[in-house]
Length: 452
Image (tube, rainbow, N blue to C red; front, side, top):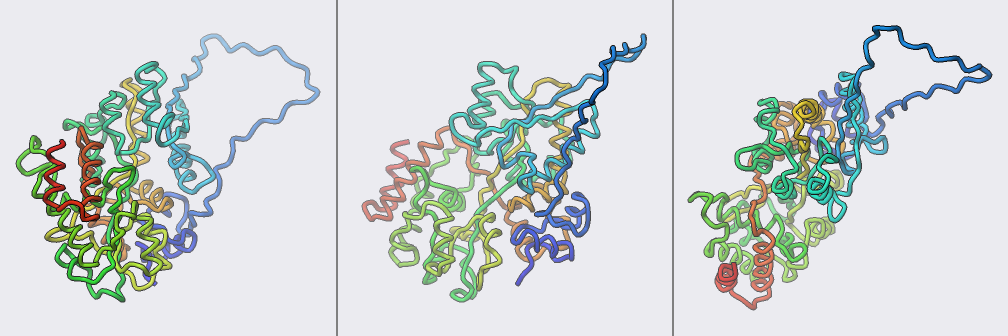
């Protein structure tokens, strides 16, 4: 059985406790968390603050006044971080234990500082973005100093003016070390507005018993028997990342003609839709391909032996990797070669506009994004790191680790469009019509442009 990411003794011991997790920088992780043989799933709980026992049968004494001229007690500064359960410093989960240890160490380095984490729902009404925008509009003094935000919701947070730029505050080597997709996805008008903390992306998995080599392009896909499944059904009436990956392989974005060039272009749309039609007509894609709405549904059919190729998230592949047989990974095929994946994930954002508080808040951000910490947290979470040095500097990566590093290097952020929901809905409608045979690819593409 291949070793997940790490090939060192420490990585083997970490794998024994974590099963299928990434062995990212195994030696660095072990040093960070307190020992070469540390099993992340059995991290010792951070001791609770001891409480002093109540005195018994002692008469109360008048308090002794401080001597004249005594220095005043130090002022305690409190930093507030709005977070979700996944990024909470709790002893209940290994990722929380890692954060708790880092926060405790940071507070020890700053005795005047206390860090308070406030839980929010990740999405929807009463969720992170909703709370940030509502509080910022009504009582901005109650906003936190830092917050965790889904990268897909970062544009709304920036537009709502509740996050602050980081360019002049961050160590330049930190920003430079981010994978390009993470840096680009958090950059608005040439200002870095967040630090992506974790990532995920989709790639191809294929059955090596059915295929000697994976298809690298659409002609290769269409010349194989399949079945090849991917989530052509979209979610919530909108196309998902997999359609966008295929479209961006035809029409890179921002367009080479410049940022004013439109995202949707008729010939490019028709090319993607023709690929869908050809795949269904030739039996490479199942006729019910639009019934697959996410990669988990595709993965279930692949694991059950009902598909020879599928798209899968890196997180799901890592979770199930050990039980796979006769499987290998490859990039998602594009029109003329490998397509670039779309990176997604959550970012830490700076909220406070107070320069004095910003200095401490950014120092905490940088600490949580240290390569060893980023490696340890993502190792425990089963997600991907966002700093290149986490994987690039490791000499213990196995083939999947090297593959993921290349995928992260080539990844791109989701296109940022002012009318994204409208465009994504129109695209999904076109996919449905073409697969059902009620419109030709050219007709569907033309209709999309007419209605924009």
